[in-house]
Structures are given as C-alpha cells and as structure tokens.
Amino acid sequence: MKIGNNKFGWGEYLRPTPKNVQKIADALVALSLFATGYAVVMECKVVAMIFIALGAIGVFGQKLVGE
Image (cartoon, rainbow, N blue to C red; front, top):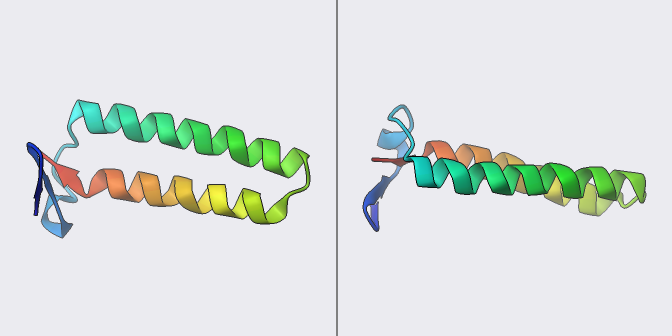
C-alpha cells in the first residue's frame, strides 16, 4: 500500500524509516510517556493503560512505513 511518497506494509518492516515519519512517531511516543506518567501520578489506571497502548502501537506502526 502506498501512502503519499511512503510505502506501508509488512514488507517494509526491515527497511529504513523516513526521517519525517521518525520525527512524528518519536513526538507521539514522548507525548504518550508524559501522559502515562501524569495518569499514573493522578491514579487514573485506565487512562495510563490507554496511553501505554497508544505508545506501543505508534512505535510498531513506525516500523511498518518504509521508503
């Protein structure tokens, strides 16, 4: 599958990730870490689990996008 100038799929897992996708994914993971920490401090377990899952999905999804 092609999204913009990037390919997306299982065959792209081991290929290099474009820099713009890396920056976006890293920003989303950083946001997820911050929000998870805040949710843990505020004792919102469900919100913390949601942000942990979103961070994991973001990191995995980053690997599926190739040049």
